[in-house]
Image 1 (cartoon, rainbow, N blue to C red):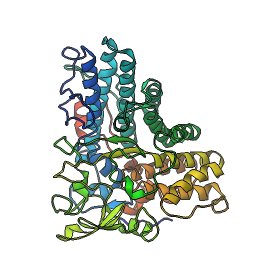
Image 2 (cartoon, rainbow, N blue to C red):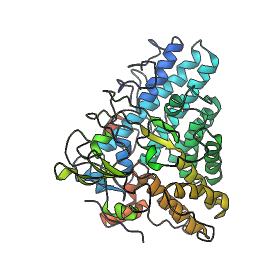
Image 3 (tube, one colour):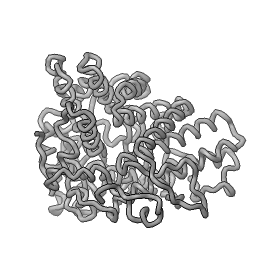
Length: 486
C-alpha cells in the first residue's frame, strides 16, 4: 500500500477519430499518398490530435503516471503497483507507453510541418494548421522531457526505410525547442476555431499561452510564466471569474473553464479507459482492484467538512459524492472506500467524459506562484489565490496571513494539490519542487518528489526523479544511453 507522508516511434494505426472533428484521421501518412490538398491537411492535423487519445496516453496512462508515484494515490493492482512502490525499471510496461506514443505524436506533427506548406490551400487555414502542429509537438516533448529528461530531438518525420538511431539531446535543448515551437504556435494559431467545443479540443492562441505558462513555471522562468498565465486569465474566453460551483466542472466536457481537453465520443475510439480503471462498480463496468485510490493521508489532508472540492454532495450511483471523490459502499471489497470522482461515465472502458489537460484555475495558481517567486506576496497575486480558495468555500486570506514568500509558497502548493487533485499533475509538481529546492537551497517546499522517494524506498534515490529509457528503445537505437542509475 502507499506511503503515508506527512509534511516535515514511428507512425502507426490511429486509435480512432475525435468526436469534435469532422475529418477522418489518416492511418498512414506519407508524402507519396497524402498531402495533396486541403482535406489531406485537415485529416493530418486530426490524426496528430488523435495520438493523444489512446489508453497509452491521456486515455489513462498519463494520468496514472502523474498520480500513482505521488502522495495522492495508491493501488494494490499488479499492473501499477510498481508506480506506487517506486520500483519501475526499463521493462515496466507503463514506462514505455508514453515514450512510444509521445514520439508517435511528434512524428505526425513533423510530417505536417514538412508537407503542409507545399499544399495549395487557403493560406490562413494553412498557417493555423501549422501552428497547431507546433503546439502538438511542444506538448508531446514537454511530457517526454518531464518524464525522461533528455530524449532524441526529432524535427523531421521518420519515414519508411530511414534509420531511427539518434542520440538524446539534453533536457535544456528539448526545453529550448518547446519554447520555440510554442512561440511559433502563438503567432500562427487562430484566435478561435469557430465554436466553444472546437476551441477546447484544438489549439487556439490562448491554449498555447496556457501551455507556455506551465512550461515556463516548470523552468522557473517566473516573469514569462506570469505573463503567459495572465494572457489566458484576461482574455475572457474562459469566463471573467471562476465557475461558482466546483462540482459543476465535473465531468469536464467543454465547460467554460476548460482550456484544452482530450475529447472522447464514448464509442470504441481507443479510448478513455481511466474512469473504469479508477471508479467503484457501479458505476464502473467491472469490479477489480482499482488504480489511483486516494491515500489515507490525502483524505485527511482534504477538508471534507468545509472545502467544496471534497464536501459531501449527495448520494450517487456507487456511493456518496464528495465532488472530487466518491465514497463507495457497494459490491465486493474492491468497491468500498474512497475513489476518484472527477470522471463519472464508464461505458465499458469507452467513457464519453473528456480529459482536461489545461484549465483556468491552474492559470490563477500559476500566476500567483510566479508573482510570489519574483517579488514576494502582493495583493495582485493574493487575489488570484483567493479566487481559488473562495470558490472552494474557504475564507479569503490577507497579506497579513501570508506575509512572507515562504508562507505564500506553502499556500500555493497546498491549493495546487487540492484544486488539481487526481488530474495527473501531482507527481510533476513534486518533481518541480525537488528541482526548485536543488536550484535554490534557500527555498522550501513542504513535500518534494525526493521526500516521497525516501519515504517509500528508505533513501533519496535521485535517479527515480526520471523514468528509465525503455528497453525497446535501447535495443533499437544504439545511439541512445540509459538514464543514470538504471
